[in-house]
Amino acid sequence: MDIPSKALWTFPALVKEQAKRHGDQPFCTFEDGQAFTFAELDEETNRLASGLAGLGIGRGDRVVAMLGNGKEFLVTMIATHKRGAIFVPLNTELKGAFLRHQLSNTEPRVVFVDASLRPLFDTVDYKGTEIAATVVVAGDASPLPNTRGVAYEQLASTPASAADVVATDYRDVCMIIFTSGTTGPAKGVVMPHAHCFYYALSARHATGLTPADRMYISMPLFHGTALMLQFYSCLLAGIPAYVAQRFSASTWLDEIRAFGATVTYAVGVMPEFVFKQPPRSDDADNPLRLSWSVPVSDSWAPAFEKRFDMRILQGYGMTEFSVPVWGDLADPVTPGCAGRVIDEFFALQVVDPETDEPLAPGEVGEIVVRPKQPFVFMAGYYRMPEKTIEAWRNLWFHSGDAGYLDERGRLFYVDRIKDRIRRRGENISAFEIEEVISSHPHVQQCAVVGVKTADAGGEDEVMAFVVALDGGQLRAEALMDWCVPRMPRYAVPRFIEFVPEIERTASGKIRKQALRDIGPSPQTWDRHRAGYVVPR
Image (cartoon, rainbow, N blue to C red):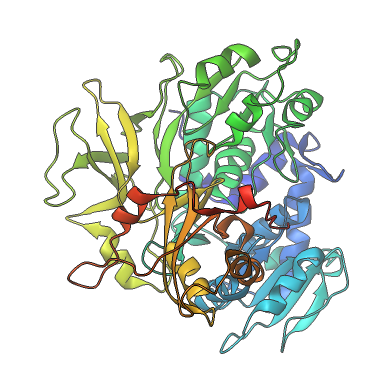
């Protein structure tokens, strides 16, 4: 692997280097028509960094961004890093208690928000959360409570001053990305620059990016896949990227053709949704050579490769440790086969989840990982030391995922061990959904699990088991009406099962595996079957 000098292992350093090297070459083009060259990215982020300096943002301050897939997201992130501050991208569907938790945990000095998303902040109780300024993109600068409002366009036109760009190091923290809690609220993963850089380095190497490549990005930039594996690897490789507002199975191939994209990433149910589109005689007439996609199934993956005349590459990773395992294009696409560990950077074992003893090839256990290089791993969960300690045991990070190694050293992912739900590419905290449902005045208790269905593409659907206070008078539709304004759209349960009681262990814990085993029945309320639509 060609590893650059660690002097380039930060966003600001690499942006500056690529501006010198590639100058006016096109870099990012966005669906709304905006674009920037490598040089323009450096110039625009210098101006916004000076604007942030004027707001008093400095080293270690948190800057929250609730922005869609546009130019402003990337400029804000790199300008934040040029101030030595910490960028905190938030899921654009957060609202209510979900949003409040991430704001109160990180205590941002400044919040950047798309004008269209500004109303989501009005669902938040700001108890104890002090924010200095609200920067609103493409709309009236309507501030959050007790803050000053600033228009993005005004801040971004600040004259640049070299003195406002502070020195950053690969060991410095640059990002906090929230990932699902299992038995508690979402956790903020503290990411040093080296951690983020490894994403890009490994992606460039594993996908074999060359100057002839062009990247198509349709996943949200607030996720590590789009932001680090795609955007950052393009910055490192010096190649153009196209950023769509959102994924659409019906326009996916047309947009790839229009941009001339050779590489894309489509995870979760995305490639299966594409495959389910009506076949066309010219499906194979496209510039794609590769899609990084996980998980895959025998029922569609080989046929997908043949239909679109391209290859599928797999891997294994988590926000906490990026992607230590990558597939090999020399191997045929095989469901569950993530590939081999990048052993220059990581060690990986499969162990007995009770004893932490390593298991023999073929034996299923918990996947554990640790770094071989400093700072390429998370620095912990932000302001959650007990969760950080819980994740590390016997000097290994415990993923909570089940898998096995084969005789050739390839990792096969099997399932989750911990109580996590993954739906539509999102890791969902059952705990946070349970808090919202339990707050309904007619709910006594509830338990939320992920369940498998034939139409979920290998991912989970959210199912809530609910004990009502009024002996069965509460209707599922009314409970949905309670959930929709209080949680992200992707977290709203699909299935509701009203039960007289929820079984617990002797220590008082809910037997969630038993609930998963029960799953939905023909009598379970299903919002798809009921025609209940959750609006965007």
